[in-house]
Length: 234
Figure 1 (cartoon, rainbow, N blue to C red):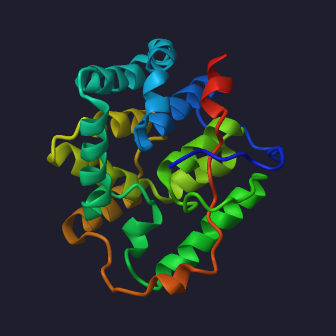
Figure 2: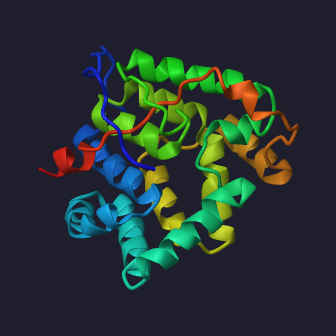
């Protein structure tokens, strides 16, 4: 779950950043990306920095993030790591891989991952293979590192999956539900069509046609950036 360097700067785009306060969005998505990634000694060492950033965010984003920080403040790192794996790796409806909600373990997921690869390349990002490009923390780093136009389109296209993730985390009473709630607070209002897809996904769950991992072997995953958190907090 390490963060890896990008090989060239992000290309500029002409669209405006989503939302009225792009700097707050970047700060929020940086923190949310960090908190949704696998907890490590390094990330734990940045807790005070995270709390400083959270304190400056809008109330509807700050409150759920503060709730997560309070809930995990006294949890030993190994326990938090175990809870993370039990939550995100072992529960189908708590996946952090956005294309999984629409495509599941089917042949369609390969094509879905290609669209993520194309989106990242359009933003000027290179790959290094440490994570698949639909990994939610990775997409949020794209949002934090750029003007947010491309990342915003990706998040909007997978908003129903994000809502399923939020609802599933709330159902199992995971403190990570607070982090996803904060993410939702940074996104545009849920549209009626997306809400309908969300209800369908909650009822049915992700598709389950099983395919071999070799079906995805031709894809080169995107990774994240080691210095992102430090640069944003300076």
